[in-house]
Length: 288
Length: 112
Image 1: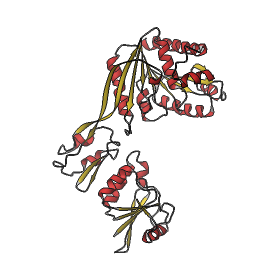
Image 2: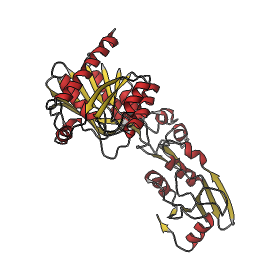
Image 3: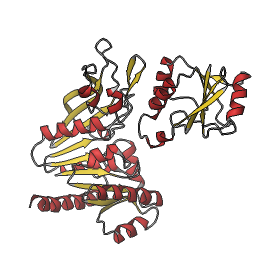
Image 4: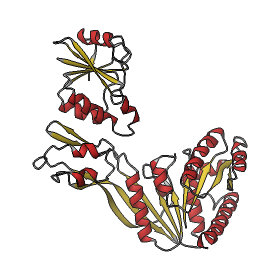
């Protein structure tokens, strides 16, 4: 069961929910938590596990070979991202723009653009009781999150082929990284706050998930602030509101110290229990 | 010598385009032949990625010696333009093309 935890708006509580839900569920069963927000992973601040695996991740980019190049210009014609450009007697490659599609390399008549690995980040795998925690971190200067997200998901698929609960803490927004992080999910939890900003970005996220044909539900975080806009919207759109985590100063204090919340605040644990039950129901449905 | 301008139109009275990669047009003035030509770059608006290097390549192929623009090219475009051995002057984003040309002649523009 793969569950992505996403949001339109940033800072709504994806990581708070991911880390607390994963730790709570892992009290009784095997759970995998994956931080796919590779540009700024922070789930690790709340999970102190033992490092069991670490490896550098690479993406493939073309490298120009001056001596064999016939300057046909095929490379720049087939590149949709303008990552390869022929300038007079020279071919220039822009690694940040390259999407590793291999077109220039495969179609070069003189094989003068072999693909070579370029390091883009690091994957780390930690273990803490029943909880397996995997995070990937993009190197400074790397612009593309998608290849690292994709490779991280592949690692999870290989390491954990069994059907356990896998929680994917996703990046915010509605662009390519979010699509990559949610596209294989069986269910997506959209975390929002009950404010006009939260509602606006929730609507964008809902549109995205509908476009992807995803099953999804909403968790309202900081319930009690703002207005009823999100609740009304979910009601009209028939979107399940799976849980409502209260707004409470103590939550912010625990979070700011890098501590888990549900162990200290019973109302939060109650909401996690409700989400856990919802996931169990889904599992029965998914496994039918 | 050929002087290229990033512009929003094709006349001396047209406004400059402050952007480089997504400039609407290039106007190129050949001060020896006293001829103006232009290049329509409006398709760059539809380019999701890499507008900078793509536009820089166009400018490279136009064989200009000088570029007069507004904000200046970004990193990728600047790398390409270095190869073109081109002098780049910035700060003309709010002018008409004529005013930008005069400012360039009078040394009022900063070199990039």
